Length: 187
View 1 (cartoon, rainbow, N blue to C red):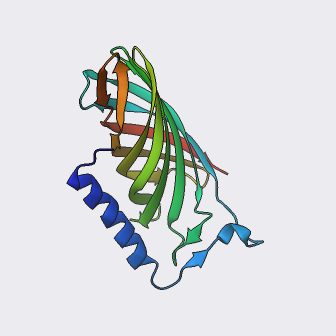
View 2 (view 1 turned 30 degrees about the vertical axis):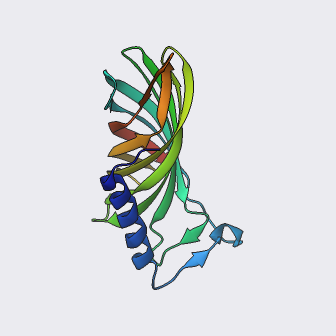
């Protein structure tokens, strides 16, 4: 997999910030605690995706499920695991993107949160020939809590991929960026 130095730097920065933030208290496997509450949120999204090395750009839509991280916690309970499933179909390229993104959240005021983090995933593509590639990504977003149960937000992220076999003898990566808006419900 080909990754730019900026991708490595972004992922390293997220890891270092997370490590520094957890210096006060770090709890492994909170999911095993009898009082663990995952605070599940489910949302729908739509936005714009542009593939860097292929002439393809257009609308993308998806769903997002997020929960408090079941693997470890930070002192201020601001690490969330986002699982995203997005679909893109434009300019002869069709792909479904499954992503896992831990997000570090910072509360800006009572109703606004800013989050950022790395992620990994897989793209199932169908561009003249089926192919599946693995991904790494870095993203950021804002979330506005409309009420205790309803939220809206906006995210941007860049994704680096392996090369996909798009046609006989032709391989190209599916590196892309995506900007999207979302609305969801907190259970």
